[in-house]
Amino acid sequence: MLKAFPMDKFVAYKRFVSRKLEPDEAHDVFVADLRQLASLAGSISDSVSMSCVYQRTTSWSSIGRYDP
Image (cartoon, rainbow, N blue to C red; front, side, top):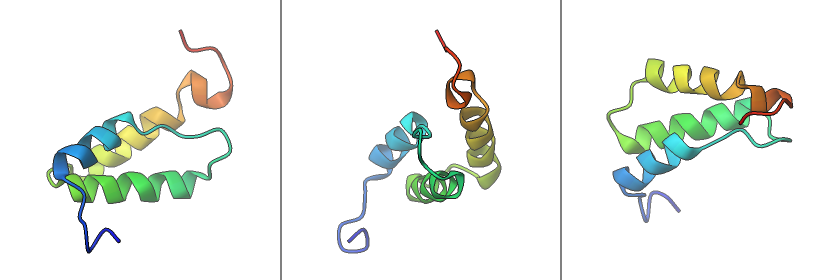
């Protein structure tokens, strides 16, 4: 479907920066989705996307603690 109607790179970037790990979501699915969004956004390097993954998966909220 994405090949027929590709996502706008600005929409992909907005989704990339707002994407968070869901409570029951597998980490590999989360990483794959972020990599796909980064690829669609264009100018996001793999090292930047992986640093975002690290920050989002090691936050207090992702391990069940309160994050004000």
